[in-house]
Length: 280
Length: 340
Image (tube, rainbow over all chains, first blue to last red; front, side, top):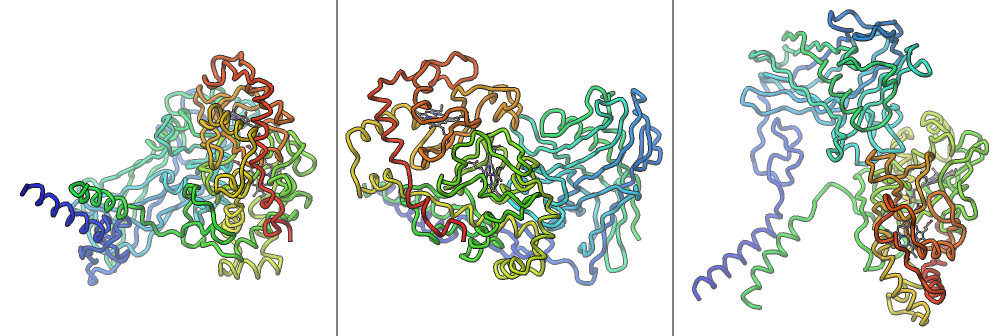
């Protein structure tokens, strides 16, 4: 009898406690804080702020496009030869999304850029960069980013900024972002063109083409503060689209999510290499 | 009972408190009267900056009827979605867009869209806000670019004023355009058919209608599930796969999805002829005949439909009289939805 009564009281108390606590995820809810947790609904007093003495600095990432094994200089509207089949290839478009950029702190936690969506468009300049100002001061050991757009933003309706459908990186008949768009001329291909629109964010049917890349600063800690910035140069190898000997005659186009898009996005992502970093 | 009370309370507490608490505005369906209590929750929650208002709805309505949103200034959304036919394109198997170009699918009716988890016959579009992009940009429909659309809107004083009033941004963006459309589309609510009045006890059914309802519950409601009259999943009811249209397969590339299409709602069904994704069946009588007969294709067609229901002519008549109760006169005549 006693135990029943105790259970009774216990459960009631628990129920009341749950109603009031709202079963909300607790964490730091201040976006200004360095450990801001966007999923937290209730502040638990854990917010930590960047040392104001350190101030803020800039993270710049340069995308240095290259071609093939010997990393030859790459440029648009220039004819290159396929690494395996020697077919001729000329790029007219090369655009891709870089999103969800993070920097890792020495204790393993991450600083995350908010609204982190960048469209990299290669044009006459084959070394475009992105810059994030106001990264909180501190030491960092690695950078992480996504090639593509996280699944949530693929299912959340009309977006703006880099994610606006007017950027032409959006499938309007099969909703979702085109993560990587590569187009150009290739005489050997049917119709003389190649056209790769790579995307897909669902795990079912293996159509998730999102690539997550992490580059550690080789054991070093880079510092950001009022007078120190981080500059990173990545090599992006454009020949990786045809990695493994895929020929243009075999596959001149990919225009929707699926196995082919995942394979090609994976190959392309593998061709992102940390070439250089500096801290000044 | 007393002993279980705390446990029940505990469970309720979990349910109450764990309800998603997002920074979103729920759909204010109340703008045009109440949605019946037996309707489920709409599937969309809208971003905070797309909060619904009467003026937002009015703006969406103006856009829906504006032929200048098409390449040859001849086609508006309403050219293929007529209110008097519950916003379908009656009589046409496939709709005609700019420069007389034909599409490949039948124009579906538009209502209760806030309950559709995905749009189009193949379910390729996953959110009501991005829905208008397909018709606006498709070369067979309105054939515009977003740049052209924004240039037009930003140069019309009337639109400038209206957009400013609703979204309060200095320039009209593609996001505002899509938000405005979504407010109009999400509030096209049809829930006042004779069937609804019957469910609410305001009217009674004839014997024939009642028998039809029973037949419907027995054979059809698995897929055409009340109160929305669709589960909004995908099925193959034996219309057939063609090279030209493989249905859901075109989105998923999964073999089993060949010839599957989004299950259509049957509300207002006697207004939306011809029927099926390709408009290949002209009348409801023929649709019922189609379900009555056995299907020869045994690999793709949904197993429950293969043998055919073999309805008697009395049963056919009863089903038909039930389907006719799903028409919502109020919805198709309500001036709030029509062209100003």
